[in-house]
Amino acid sequence: MKVVLDTNVLILPFTDKIDVFSDLDTLQEEYGRLEPVVPQLCLLELEKVRPDLYPAVLKLVSKHTSVVFIQGDDTDSAILDYCLKHSAALVTLDKELLKRAKHLGIKTITVKNFKLR
Image (tube, rainbow, N blue to C red; front, side, top):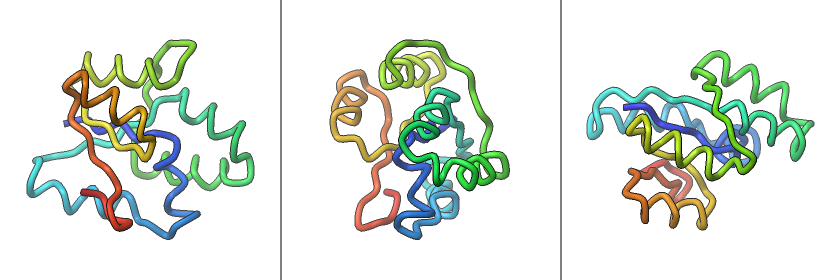
């Protein structure tokens, strides 16, 4: 299953010392093979809001994920559309985005107690 990583999740290894990719690996027993993907819109958003972390995140992303190209003026709506079209799960800390995803029937993975669940 593809798993879309939102912008706020991409910075966790640097801001909260959370190894997102190891945590996703532990979930594979429950969910099967998980393929993390990052929308290019999230990388563009990250470059604007956290230019200090952008190079490090880009290096991490290139090592552990695929970048997917999605279109849309609104990043959140584009992410949701991608998840629906590809039956992908979503990993985010954004409560409003989580609410929208659940309303659409998209599987979500949240960070609880600084672990992905």
